[in-house]
Image (cartoon, rainbow, N blue to C red; front, side, top):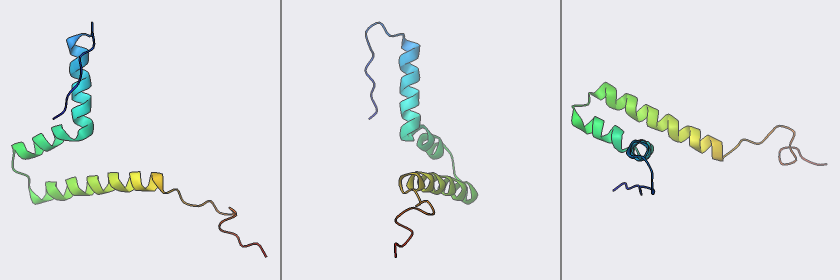
Length: 77
């Protein structure tokens, strides 16, 4: 369950914005929307493709390719 702590003197609308942001980051809102109505096979394929692309971007970011000419790629004779 997602929770946020309301800070002392914080306006309610700002706390709601933080809650919405956290729900969006965790993917809860998207899941609720998906489960609310029937999902066609085409929509399911699109959703899975978007998720795969997002995972690929994250995987690529943390496994940076080696630059050409770097000491690991050239052999010292």
